Length: 107
Image (cartoon, rainbow, N blue to C red; front, side, top):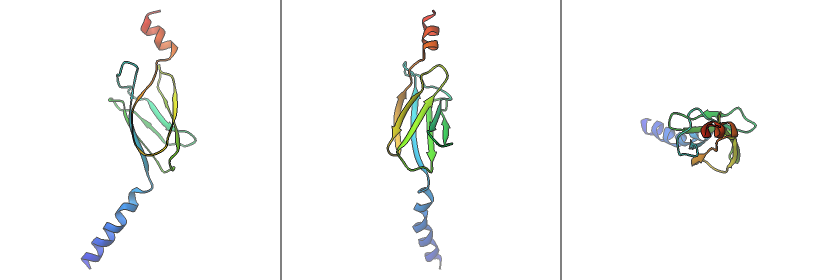
């Protein structure tokens, strides 16, 4: 009986993770510095994630892939792009917006 239970658990274990699709990545600025608390969201859903102190994020959704995600943070231009499959998106660079550029230039 114990063997049957173990086999059933091992057989059903992969099905527990099927419902979630996951993408990870890191958000940095033009200087290569991590952006803290940037918003990463999937268009037309309520799925949202925020970057940590290192600029890293993990975005999970039950929506199947071919996501259009939007990344935004105060002082930076909002970026949108498509995610075709899960895994790591690597480093994503956000550009400064005009207000931030003027502030950095001291004008």
